[in-house]
Image 1 (tube, one colour):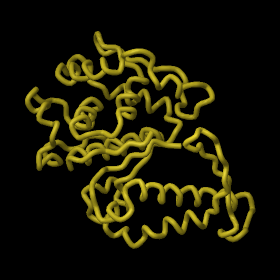
Image 2: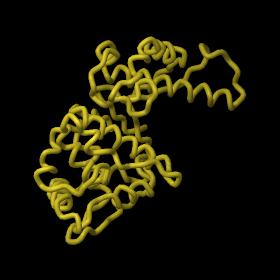
Image 3: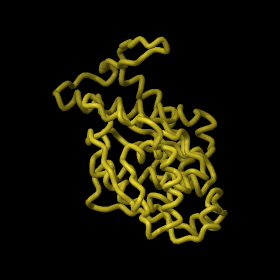
Image 4: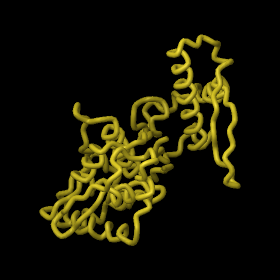
Length: 265
């Protein structure tokens, strides 16, 4: 289980397979390889075309059904992407440098360290303009019980920390549920909204005047030169933080290209 994100930059492979079609084939290939590796570690040397696994899913009627999936079918479905990988070379939306690098994920459970890291990126009162914008945004996520509470139930796999982390930023108090909701439960991320998230989480410089901040809603042609991406890899990062930084870089590229970042949580 993971949060999937896709830079909605149109290209020939997406025209042929759709963004979701590419995503499902890549996820199927990864799932198939994981199953093969698991079988091999347990000493099972059967040919790949004899290996299968059970997959459960909920039907539109709300009934759970289980079916057997053969791994070679998943691998065959993904093989059709191979002739299209060269289109990813030099693509401005390629976030990773690998084929189909416009697609990424954040695996569950999200670590407690990563949630603290997110809270620590937020602007303080000494940065008045970003702080005021953050306060305005947080007010939208402070009505009633957070839907993220259910994701923190003891039997749920989404978070390492089942409690809610809180940070005080002057008179503003923000918690980790609000951060998650603001980042991942707002639907597909439009460039204007993405620019504010980049500002809030210190992915681009925050020392701007009000007019310049408001002008971020549509990125200029020289966005990547004027507003470099600030997040760097750190040897102390855990997997969740590493994947979150990749998410923010994908958001940055989507904003700079004036396209959406598609989300599937």
